[in-house]
Length: 191
Image (cartoon, rainbow, N blue to C red; front, side, top):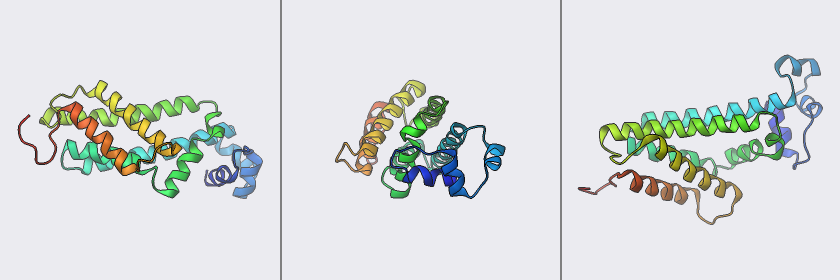
């Protein structure tokens, strides 16, 4: 997987063959097919591995937070931080390349990742509804709306179609979410 990542990172969109990957890895064709049925299976495994890592980080940050409001803030900031860290940004670019998007099964993997993102947000919203920090929350539909705003901000950061830094974009999504959920901001009293 690491050899495939290196090949894709330096391919300039020209495409990468299994032969290229094997040469980079120093492996034989037989070794490749012991682990993967096809190049598409390798590419999807790479996407799944990185997606699972990101979700584990977000879930860990949310669990470590002292409150649902802190958890939602950590989730949103953590997700958008991927766009501003050079090494991670490069991985996102490789794993959203045309080569990966052409892989059979990519759409299903991407959908799985988006559902997991949305489910994590919904869990935070349920906790906030239960403890009163998100009194207006409707967890599932609100998680869908927050995920949509978050992934749009993420896409803008990745395409560099915005001059807004990732931290500012995170604050914008957080402020939108908190207003929609009826959350109090630090120092606020009453409703």
